[in-house]
Length: 496
Image (cartoon, rainbow, N blue to C red; front, top):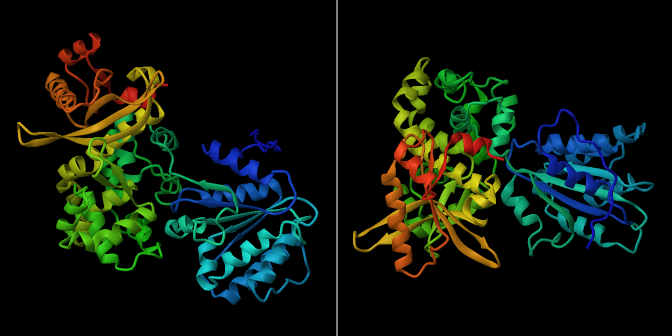
């Protein structure tokens, strides 16, 4: 079905990236057709959702209301005052409940389509759980009094667990939304550009600390970006390791802001276990000192909050690897949290950072580099690189019965070759701080032999080495013979 035509609205010049998000929002705001439309915008905190929606309201002459943590009565009072400012009414309306409030909002679009944004929507529902049902009733009156009104209502929130349930099958609003947009962090290439970092090695190091969250540069470090590799250590000390700077406590706030998190000490312990290399539910439970059944709920909540991901093993269908989704949280639990007492001292940052170098490289940067390599395959690599179109990119483990061990594979690429899908295109190893040599290639060949022996089609699979420091001449010679694919930092950041 062809997409309905809509009025093109230029993206504000002050908005970095977000072309896709702006296009989706403006298409929704200017959509034709009678009656109300509902859109939902979600995403972890600090990603720029409010900035996007405030800009949308301004560009379309719409109404923007940011809810506060307030009582139901005060929230209705504040909404009435916001409507009065928007309409230039001499006396603010006083809705007594959300039924009247929705009537008030929908009346704003009596004569033309109007974008109506309610930001921090979960705050309102917390005080009046009937609000989604009231909204469903208003949206459902397509043939009644609202048919001639044209509100384009957007609900926004950062509480990912709540927003994920808002349109679920058990919600009153299930099936009612015309837009369900998740605002993600900037991709690693866009993040490097946003931080004005041209050196790809510095870009990886910085991204492993702050990820692609836009607010961390502007509001949290006041545009203080590392000035070259020589400045990176000092930058870490003066920003994320300094208790007086807001970035220092941000990781704990992200967890505290989620309403579904009850026992915060347990949740922090779970995150710390993952940050220090425990990726299976059994390993996490052992590190926390609980039974696996005791941590199933925290793992489920952290996934709903968008703070953890569970990535299926490429070769073992009954196994998943848990990974922290926000780099700052991984950095906090691996580096900051174990040394908070020392960091409270005036000169603690430099001492902590010097002592944490090995931990930072092995538990933070190494796994993060593996993640960036998988993202490169998914979003940036030329499809011809692997002889087919990558469809599923993950990691996995392959058992080696003869050696009584298993081999971890950092990057596993399955894709399409001709009409066939699900073909194994590549297995890869990623090393951040090592110059890779032919021994790494031999290991990958051995893993391919193990896979072939157990019936996996490896005829299209190519070994790939990903390195943050480069490759030996012998390995480059093997690449020249088309025996291995080599991906360095320049290729990770520059290949189009």
